[in-house]
Image (cartoon, rainbow, N blue to C red; front, side, top):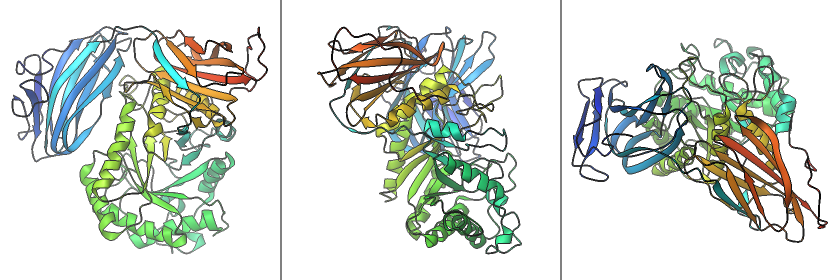
Length: 596
């Protein structure tokens, strides 16, 4: 579909673009991945918005399954470089944008691949190879976009006899379970779903420093200086739901920053943080004894809407606050910087160097990632985070993905973060499966209420991605991770767990974009002196986690499903100890699906 993806015939098929005099695009023969040539993009010293790119416009068919891949190498890239898609309708108007894995700094050749389905309204595609930032060089090679035509069912296998760890459902989120914006109360639904932890970010007033301590002219040690009332409501609702509090100390988003500037006095700011800890953990100012363990300092200080200061100013703020919190209780977990993107290399260099040089407490490292094209990129991103910390000699800290979502830009609704649909559900399930062995301590979906793309709508009804959290709640009774195969690194995944006594098992299958017509699941390692009832629940264009089948497993330990992507399939298995045949097929499971 692409012309000259290896650049072997020069710029044939590609159009170049630059935004500044110090930027360039060319085809070179010195740095190549395969063949004799590659594309080279350069941005020179200048503004952050400097850009160099190659692009190609092609025709596509709605509903077609595509495999996209490319190789990339970077040198001294200050911001990011990647492939980038713009999907077009029949009139050439952009329908949505889709990005791929952001590369930064200096890296050897890497390959990236994604599987995608052409949206129904799309007839054209612009494929960009883009570099943006103040400086850097990027090389692209072996760019390929080909149709996928194999529609044979995907083959999966599960071995229930082995134990390889613990299932991590990552049932954590940002905001909720009450919202002063929408007035929706989700306490009971959080409890039913088993939400593990709630990050206190973007309540826009409650939990913000300016909402708690609004007047800097007042003393930081006087209870009269603090307004805890609305924040008390938020924290009380979180604890009432059974979730843990992951307290973000900082400010919510502001399009025109007012409160997201460096505080006028870092020592006072640190004292305010300390008194917030005292209020919620030690009863200060008619407070509580919640024993909140995790305290994250600020949010996305690498983005102007959250921090108008420099990286060094943030590092100093972090240092002051971390030491003040540790003075309350050395066992409390303090961390950050909750960067918007690991591609903010200059910011991270300043922060991590400061932490290392000043022996600043850093119990956990947090970052954010919003990826649209391949769930496996979340695994790769966390590995990059580990490598980043190792480069500064920082080891043994927990890693938190404190914001994530599989957003896609939707210009029709002018939303950066939109589209609540079965693809969102399949992507969420695949991301959580890919993160099982990534080394993360926790991952926080942004967010719980409907603000752009929540787990719940503002009327309390559950969203498509929320259905995935509902499905994952079933792993609370089957928490032992068992081997599962048949997934890939392109959006087809499988997660399997069993109960400690082997009486129950759960399997979650997801497929975001392949051409496969359903699946076949082979099970081994189940107890042979019994039969098992199984129940199939599906999320797709026609089902919202609804039961679509049931049956008995005895001699033939195989379950199949005929379904088109994108979909999520939850299978629940229950052992029948008395093994007598024939046995009637149960229509409903002996234990209900976690539902609302």
